[in-house]
Image 1: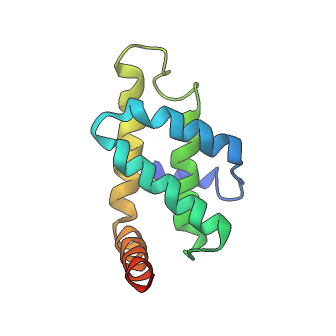
Image 2 (image 1 turned 180 degrees about the horizontal axis):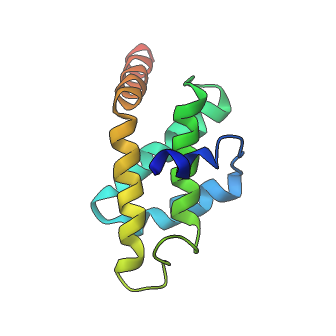
Length: 116
């Protein structure tokens, strides 16, 4: 099921406006705020050429971001508390699926920081 959800975003580009929307909505994700912001940073670094990853992993990130910013999803965001539960679940799923990619990304950032 989740693969089907992300498949629809395989060829979808993400805009700077959508990334800004994502940053502003991150605060609604409870304990997953940091995780979601990490996904946004990874996406920005891929788009700017600072980090390389395979297209499927980027699809998962873009799909997660677009799902979170969409007002129309499994549980609409205007429903108090419950409206963000599906968004949190999608972020948690993405974090699990991308765990190896996330570790590579963090390592690259750490090495770059040490070299500067």
